[in-house]
Image (cartoon, rainbow, N blue to C red; front, side, top):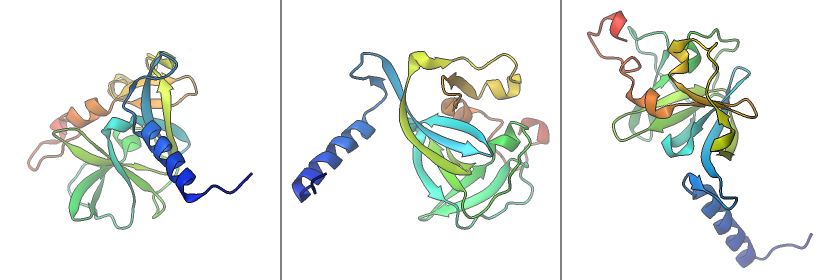
Length: 182
């Protein structure tokens, strides 16, 4: 394969950036798609719509906060901003098979009112998923978990409902809140 010159490389990278930056919607095949970030927790594959992902950050230091629910791992400082970090497996009451290390990533999700981090073992990538290939979560999933799952893709990715997570009062930890309201 011939070596690309600088101009050709720049052109290719710009085209790739345009494709990756494209908002969810109708693509060339005429089918509605959603762009997602795929990640692993233990051996389970999750994804979240890219329009909710602010950034992915490598865990360097995490500060534990006493008196918070078990699913709150702690807080991290990302360039001067403080974010709470949650473990969704613990939040969903699903047993974890692995512990945390400095190789874990934090996916910082946000909307106009809230932002926090979700811990992930690794990031598998970014891709576009046809909306017609996403099915509702099975009824066998506990209702307490199902309300945070938008659907399952044909390749068995669990699509999280970021909007539900970012607006749900049970995820927000408030000083003085009793255990029932958390």
